[in-house]
Length: 335
Ligand code: TK8
Image 1 (cartoon, rainbow, N blue to C red):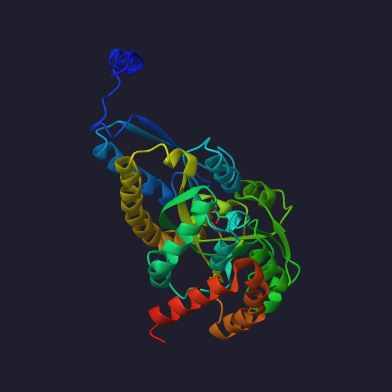
Image 2 (tube, rainbow, N blue to C red):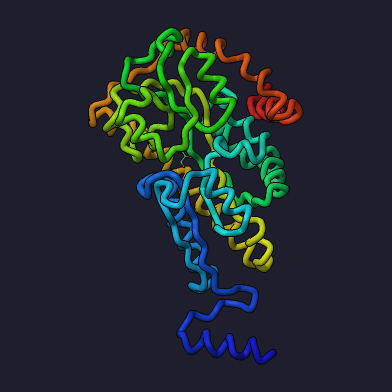
């Protein structure tokens, strides 16, 4: 043992810091941020992850969570991970397609039919392949969590037909595929970071936004939006990203703890998300939102109107990526 190590150990012991469970596990403080409120199922997932880490490290790790974009939006936080100044972020894939354009595949309109399809794709070979790609960008995807199926809210009128989208000023994520989809639907689409949406709706700078029921509920958009229409036009996954540069300073045992705990968090996060979805839909209606389903034939018209987005996005996403998604889906669907 060098003198320096002895000194450090003495200092640690004197400070009363909990000693790590094994030589391979050091004291760590992990900062995680995200854009949603703590009451969102991401909160349950993070809590499960924290319990898992505490148990596996005998309390040597602290997981510090920041909510509601307090450390910046998804994209800013993800860049902080790449430069090694923040450990972790739970982010939607959509705002970070500038970093890995192939992630745009998840933004293709009406891609997944239900959550079971999303789980099978994300937890299977396709999800692994996408996580592998993130490594080149200095990001380690620990697990796929769920944001969910997205639905339109607005303050103008119920959307029951394709024509109802016309002229609406809709906030979209910072993402060309969403921009294309909503422009094709006839709206006036504006890309904006999630943290700015509530105020933009409140001041009527925009009329509309789209997110899963749970996010509409926990971000209190019902306070500033009158109509909610079940468009279900896209499914957004969350990635639990870890900083590549910081990952490289962790022992193999520590890296395994991160992955295992993120997967335990995933199972909790997804099941709470699905339980809460119906409750959130009921709650926003109690809070005054007018809800409508869309007639299946009309939904089919909407689907056909945006079908061209697939071809127009092929160059940025990569035709090979779209093809492997489609063949994976065909297998899952037994086609
Ligand atoms: C929260 C975001 C949000 C996303 C969006 O950080 O930007 O609309 O759906 O939930 O990831």
